[in-house]
Length: 111
Image (tube, rainbow, N blue to C red):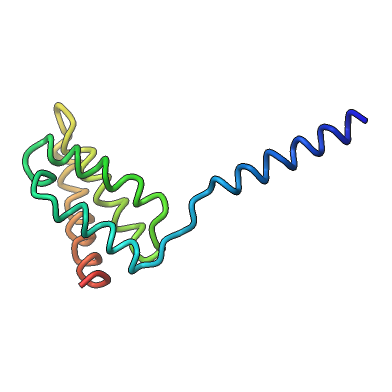
C-alpha cells in the first residue's frame, strides 16, 4: 500500500509540475515581447535602466524561441556584468561582441 501511495504521489507531483511549465514562445511571440521591453525609454538610461532591462528580459529568455534564446542570453550576460559596482572591463569587452551580435540577430528575426 505504501508503494502505491508513493507512486501516486510522485505521479501527481510530476503532473502538477508539467502543468506549471510555460510553453515555449514562437519567434514572432518572442519578438513581440522584446519589442515591448526595448520600446520603453526608461530601460536605456544608466545603470538603473540596464537593471530594469535585464529584469524584464529574464522571464522572456526563459521561454523564448530557440532562434532568439542565445541572443537574449548574450544580452543578459552583458547587462549583468555592466551593472555590477565594479565591472570587469576585460570580461565586459569580451561580452560586447556577443552583445552586438545579439543586436544583429534581433534585427534579423524581429524586423
